[in-house]
Amino acid sequence: MTTDQATPEGILQLGLGFWGSKTLLSAVELGVFTLLAEGPRTGESVRARLGLQPRGADDFLDALVSLGMLQRTDDEYANTAATELFLDRNKPSYIGGILEMANARLYPFWGSLTEALRTGQPQNELKTGEDFFPALYQDPDRLQQFLHAMTGLTMGAALAIAEKFPWERHQSVMDVGTAEGCLPVQLALRHAHLNAGGFDLPPVRPVFEAYAQSFGLADRVRFHAGDFFADDLPPADVLVMGRILHDWGLDQKLTLLKKGYDALPAGGALIVYDTVIDDDRRENTFGLLMSLNMLIEMEAGFDYTGAQCRSWMAEVGFRESYVEHLVGPDSMVVGIK
Image (cartoon, rainbow, N blue to C red; front, top):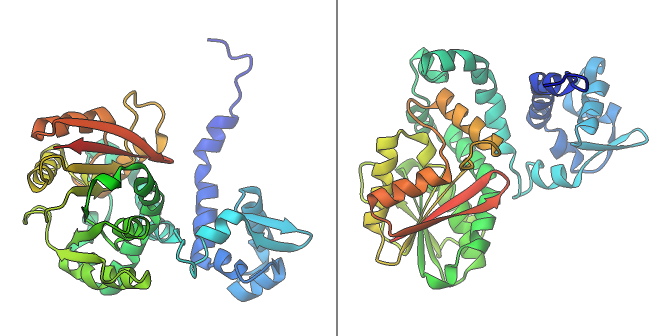
């Protein structure tokens, strides 16, 4: 191996990548993009509206320009097309909920990645004796924020599933672990013949129903309450498990896949979508990092390759399966009963 053309630039950019990440997360927290959705503003105006100190504010805004998150013309700052669409809290296309959660929870927890790798133990609230998810479902405000974050994380995959799966062959779909209901809402909007529903724990119902109502779909998109480990899954032609399997260890993954198989009719389909890792484990960096996030967040969860998921589907009885890319790091694994 020669080192004549080797430089440390890539190493340094990756090692200090958290600088840019935290700059974006703080901008979301402060409401920079929501403010600029009202129109371009000078740096002085942005500082005044957001209560920022002069020291550092110009560097902060110009760093966002350099990172491609803002535009600057003369002395006025404006959103880019992407941040205007996806980071204005007042738009239904807002995906910042997941970034808000990343800023408030995941960012400090990732500081303990080395400990997680050495111990194999979660590094979240469990370290202090609190189980985040039971506490979350007992707090309506925190639960709503979390469910909305899941919508931001899911929207791209939901739109792709609505277009890429052959829905004309099926009449009903049930989204297991539906959260706010992003997927069934998008399916109902694009496929008028579908009877769409979402299955989740009972405290999710009011958030789900309010979200469906906001699209005028209260009569077409129905909520079904239950626990996917304790209860049978509602029957449907198509079941969907999105960002569910990676939370759990192998035995629980197989349990959920078997429950999906049992709930489907002959010819029915189970769609599993996640940041599915490429089979060679070299290309889907986000999927591999998501699996490290499961190490930090969950006691046994891990992400997986398409080949692994297909083998698990075959083990529980699915007669055929295939993997299809959706968008970005997301893919779906489809099993046919």
